[in-house]
Image (cartoon, rainbow, N blue to C red; front, side, top):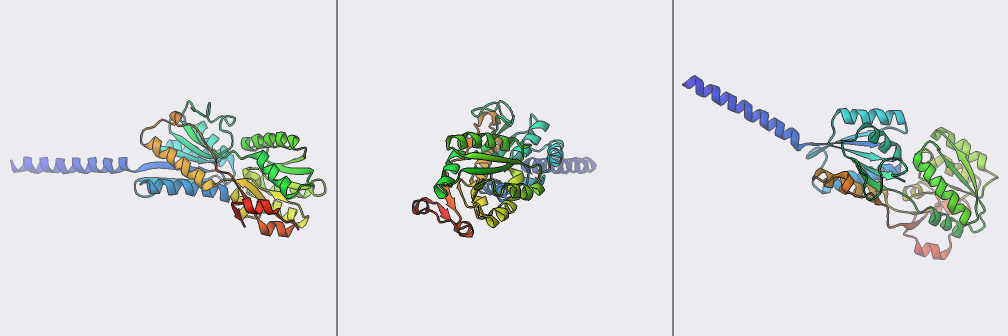
Length: 322
């Protein structure tokens, strides 16, 4: 009888340990984070997501495990990371920027995907509509107010007639924004001078070719160009050309001005989407959110560098002056 008791006790302990281990594994939520490139706007989006999760009780290393990966602007690397996340059977994938989101969406139709820093999720093929994706994807768009940004530049430099724009035609988000820029430029009677690049190493030379043929440069939210923003600004400053930039982080890096919103807050909104999904909501039931609360941001040092003075009314209206 004693042997039976020992055997039962041993089996009971082993079973309890097995169940305990399984329960411990179930408690740790596995989230893959796929960031397409390294630049402040995307970094801030990631941090907003991480902070929101932590504040909601989903702190990395405790209730959740974040597997943060960066493709460094390489689409093949983004696809490899996405494949690994799927093979690891992540509970959720958070993607930052259009190419990263497309890479993940191509690899899985079952694991929930939450994106941010995507300009047009419908044209990018991520969702069927803004109100309902119809699939496993939802997120936050960073669509910028292109016409309002061009109008801001004209208030600063009213004599501007020829506007240069550099972009990577291989990025869906860039193509969308360029088309919006063409429409806005036509409405504002601006002549648009376009230059395309395929990687960040070409940005400096592309900017140099514009000197003499443009009165200013507009950098859209293009990962390739934004990653090399300092190259654009260096050429522009040397030739007294204003650089209108797409967001707050780019003003902080030396851009002249923008009408922008917080990428950090976009990441937080994505974090809220993720938590709703982890609690049982379907991605298709969560509409795509859009950036809001756009304000004017100015860089006084950048203006002084090229001999420009901001109009007093803009200075008064600016949310922040760097």
